[in-house]
Image 1 (cartoon, protein in one colour):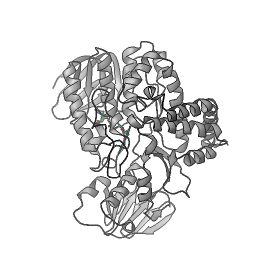
Image 2 (tube, rainbow, N blue to C red; image 1 turned 90 degrees about the vertical axis):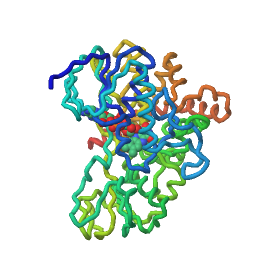
Image 3 (cartoon, rainbow, N blue to C red; image 1 turned 120 degrees about the vertical axis):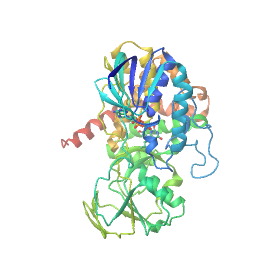
Image 4 (cartoon, rainbow, N blue to C red; image 1 turned 45 degrees about the vertical axis):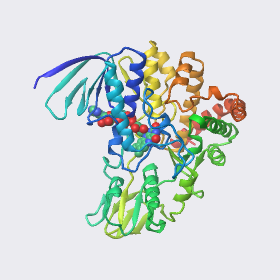
Length: 470
Ligand SMILES: Cc1cc2nc3c(=O)[nH]c(=O)nc-3n(C[C@H](O)[C@H](O)[C@H](O)COP(=O)(O)OP(=O)(O)OC[C@H]3O[C@@H](n4cnc5c(N)ncnc54)[C@H](O)[C@@H]3O)c2cc1C
């Protein structure tokens, strides 16, 4: 089959949350021609592989793309998410991205979409179904929207051996069980494991039937302070409390104690010092549920599951062939290093404000559409790699605060931020008159300078400690 040649301004590889938010922003603010390629059958990325009971851990109100709302922007009145903005399920998210492609991007006349197509490198891609191959002549830039593709249990083998007589399934299989297991061992310390535990408890499995193998303890973000919309004032109060904690902290350890005391970072077990931070979000009710699980194994990572024993780095615990071991041990967030977002021929989509993949990708789309100068684009968009350990909270917060300051000095960007539905702090401007927002603004202004100095110092110390220098 001969190779066909296509021409475009931007070749976007990846139609997950990042690629979709970027393309939407670019098409909104420019007349660029965009060619989008993804090896999956539909847009939405990893959400197509997600376990059926997963939900966003942030409100739907600021996930997706700027052009189309996701969900109804309402606060849930019942259920475990009561009092918080609704959070979409994987099915809703996949349907949403299909709508964005079909109702927004393709009708714009600026976007061509090639699903079931694998990017081969060198501006070439091939259909996974026919033998068609394409070479793309790019007038402006190649956009890597797959750089931070997450690793999920459905597509990542467990990082340990499993003997043939042991029963171990990815979390996705939990929802397809047709008979109760003798007991459930949840393997992993991140959001996926949290979701597995909560879902089992919610569906009536007694806590005594659940064992949780946690190689690490995690700092978790308090969902109360991760709301927008009507509750954006509370979010700002949270940011001001974080800045105050950073300003007053005398050491890295003291910083995390203060963040914990100010209810900004939470942990399931108050007795254990977390060594993990992936910005997963949790509510107080969820924490209370998770604390009902008493059988927590902290013996490091699993090496092997046998028929009657689980062998870990730090010891062995018994198990049985009819016990179900649930693989929640994929890394989730991609640990790829930060690289410049803009180069002459390439855009590599990465966060600027911690997490918030769609918001950051849309902002990069707007900056690409509205600015010419490469150095200025990179100054406005410093890369902020996805977090893994507590020190990443320090780095991520520092980069985010510095970027927020730069954005506040740029009136066009300020206007864009105020209009962007993906911006969680949108609407704050209109609430400046509220006493609690004024109090938070004062707290922020009083502490932001020493906070930035301390965060820089802690980051340098923590990085040196990581290299064994201190
Ligand atoms: C369970 C879970 C819950 C999460 N919840 C949130 C949340 O609430 N809020 C939040 O901000 N973040 C959340 N995240 C973080 C998550 O990383 C982002 O929300 C986002 O969905 C990631 O999007 P992405 O576009 O970077 O990656 P993906 O969704 O993986 O998209 C990348 C796409 O690139 C395609 N691709 C890769 N290589 C090629 C190739 N060679 N050729 C063609 N196509 C290719 C893939 O097929 C894929 O569709 C969550 C992550 C997980 C795992």
